[in-house]
Structures are given as C-alpha cells and as structure tokens.
Length: 492
Length: 109
Image (cartoon, rainbow over all chains, first blue to last red; front, side):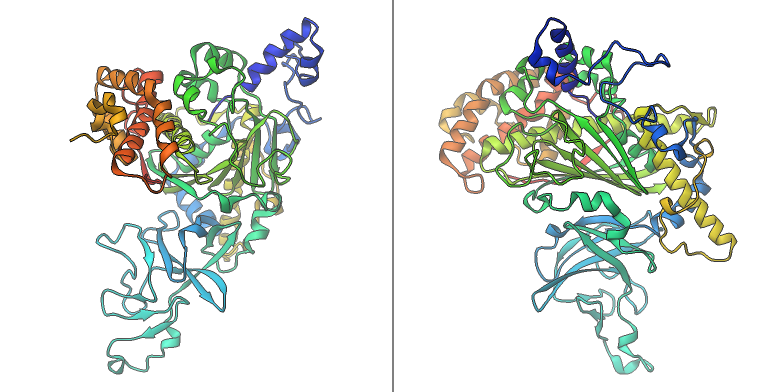
C-alpha cells in the first residue's frame, strides 16, 4: 500500500558511507545496492533466505506464473463459499462493540450464503462475560428476528431479550425460547426444542470470530502461532475507532493481493509523496524486511521512516503542521506495550531498527496491520459474487487527550481513505481484464509471495471440499491447508 | 451571528466548512471548486497551529462550547481540503472512478 522514506535513507546513507562516514556505515551493513549476485539479480537491501528468495524458501509455492481462474469463475466462487466461508473462522467485530450485558449487533453474511444473518450478543452471568452468536431467525415461522426498518441492514443496540416483531416469541440472551404467544394453541410444543440456532463464536484478543462449521477446530488452534505471537498487544487501549466500507467490483482475493504486496506502492501512490521523494521511491522500488508463512496464514514486515521523517521537506505541509500522515501520528501515545522492545514477538520478528509496519493475513479474509507509532487497523473482504465484494476497514487509535492529538489522528484517517480509493478503483480495472480470459496466467515476483500463498491456500480448501464431496462426505473437519498435500502453484 | 470564537473572526467567512462529520466534509469537498478550496486552504493552514493552541489551552475534547466545537470542525475541514490542494489538484482522488468508500463510524467532536 505504501512506500516509505526509510529506503531512501539507506540509499543516501551508502553514498555517504563511500565518503567515509563510519557512523552511517554501521546502520547500512545490509545495503549493497549496486552488487549483482551470480544470477545477475540485484542483491537485496534486506537479506533473503538461504534458498535465494522468499518464494523459494517455501517450495510448495512454486515460481511459475499463477492462474487467476479462481478469481473469475462463478462456479469456483460458489465452491469457495461452501469450502472456505462456511468452514473457517471469520472475524466479525470487537468486544468494545458490546459494552454491557444485553449489548448486541447483527451481521449480514452474504459470503456464507444469500440471506445469512447472525446476532452477536453479550451475556454476563456471575461476573463471567460470554459472547454468543445465533442465526438471526425466529424459530416460529422463520421471520428475521432482529432488524429495524430494512431487513437487510445491520443493527445494534441492547436489550434484555429478543422479541420477534411478528408474533412476539421471546428469546433470552442465551438463545432459549422463553415465551410463546398463546402457547396453548400449539400442539405439543416443547419450548426447549425451539431455541435460537447457535453459531460457533469465540474471542481472541478482543476480536470476535464466528464459524458456521459446527465441527470446526478451536479458534486459537486455527489462528496458530502468529496469533500466539501477537498476544499482549494493547488492543484494548486503542478504542478510538474509525470504520469504512466500500463495495468493490472485484473478486475478494484481488484486494488481499493488493494489500499483501507493497511492490505497487511507489508507482500507484506516487503522487501522494512529495515529487522529489516520489521519484526516488519509484526508482528504487520496494523490498520487505521479511515475509513469513505459517499454515494458512502469512505476514509481511516492512521498514518505515516517516514517523517522524528525517527531513520535514520530505512531507506535505499539512503533515508538517499536524505531525502525522499515512503511518499515523509521529508521536507515540503514552501507553505500555508499543515501544520497539515491548512489542510481542510476532511483530517486527527480526527486531529491525528500521521497522515501520507489519501486516498479518489471517485466512481467509482478515488483515491485521500494525504501525510502529502505536496504532493498528484491520481489513475484511466479504465476497458477494465472483467479481464483487464488500471491503471493510477499521482504524484504531488510543483516544486522543487533546485537539492536537485528535487532528493528528484525523489526518491519518483521511490519508488512509485517499490511498484506499486508489487501491479500490485499480481492482475494478484488473477484474474486468482478467475476466476476459485473454490471459490466464500471471507472473508474480518475490515481493508478491503472499499472493501465491493466498491463491494456493484458497484453492486447496476448494480441492479438499470437492474431494470430500466425491467421497460422499461434505465435511472437511476444519482441517488446515498446511496439513494436506502440497499443490503445484502453476495449477493454482 | 458568528459561529467561531472572536479570535478567529478572520476565518468566519469559511464557516460553512464547520461540519461535524466526515461525510459532510467529504461531500462539501466534492461539491467545491479548486479556487474555493485553495482560498480556504491558504487561510486555514496559516491558522491551524493557532486553532490547536486555542482549543487545547481552554477545553478538554469532550466538553467545549459550541464556538470552539465549530472551530474544531473547521480544523477537520482544513485536513479534508489538504488532499485536493496538496496532492490531487482536483477535488476527487485521482483515478478513483466510480469507487466510493463510505465512513460508517467515526469519533465526532
């Protein structure tokens, strides 16, 4: 999504180093921009794995061009709904959205199936807080249980019980049917058999997840080592919340593609940097500090020196006044847990001094992105058709103490939206062209490794689903891609 | 009837930019000419630091009189117009076509 000045500092620094500055040399031991390796490739600024490239470090990914039929075939999309969105843990909110007993919100889940809607509600019993999820459906004659004005719109609020608008059947916060209007008119109605239909629901670090597969593995097992390595980050302190939504005319995976590679950043977003800086950034391109893959999930770690920049002339006038920009406010908020040596181990895993941002991609559609100055954002991508999805973005800051901090966050939020606009519209341009089928396979570079992994993982879910169907068993028992046979990326 | 504190009388002519929500500020940006926004940007940028100093010396964010709130909203609009002026040279994001991103939740001062 972005490109940062840190790289420029390295480039400038090596020049200075040639002039004999030892101080600068120490910071630039990894830089050798003009050296070529034995294959004639430019040697990386940041060291790559011994395999020679990030991609070859995970041989199952392959290096061949990747087939994008998975993003244009309507039949494949239907399989993805069944194999992925009905089988995996989906992040649908945060605990701060449920401040007290009886707080609830509804989520429309078209990615899981037309009309699918869930109620998420908080209950408190004997001091124990429980977040539950139910299908948003009255057991009497199937009316949607919780909605206002427009049945298709999401709502939130708080209540002691849920009452159906149609015939006033009531349900407790635990889903039990507690009241039936004119109960005596029914025939052998056992209320205990007519509670709301539950959906698996678990909370990790304040993020609420649901899973429509009743046989799913527990959430912590599904999220795996990346999640364990992120625990302890002060998410609960970052409650100043901005939320955005956009309908995107592109396959859901294409937007994840856009956010898991920064190769595009110096080009697509060139005009957002000051001219001289933009030209340097475009010339040198992008290299990540590191990539990592653990099972279905992946991450990219990047450098970033814009908070604050080395030289004020590198940034726009509004950034100079408000001390903020795409990377967020330059000044870290005064809370524990966000200083470089306080961060949990999964963030900036190489403990690089030049670290700026890490983006974690939890399969299938949850991006969790941390910025060095102490804030984070999340993305979700909810497919509604093979060539359409709803993009959600949520930005979270520590609540500002004064107007100076508030406007600093305002600039970060406004800047985020300007970048997202550019990303979003480019996707439609991509979708229409790959949709023609004129070209089916596309070469991906080493900085696009996580795209290979995403398309491979998604395809493996579909393949396992199809295989299970062929065996007469629709369930895949929540198995992860990592536990199955490897697939040739060229056929993804 | 002026909206802004007396100390900011020079910005009163831009008081139709005193808009509390991002959606309103973004709509006004799209509906404005570059000349209008340039004039507002030039005047506003010169006073942005003063706006922060004025408010922070007097009021907490969660409790301030209407005229100070209007000043905050004006400050947020200065941030909003900075992109068309400093970056795009047009009201819309360049190459954004029919794309539309809606803000559905924001902290409103």
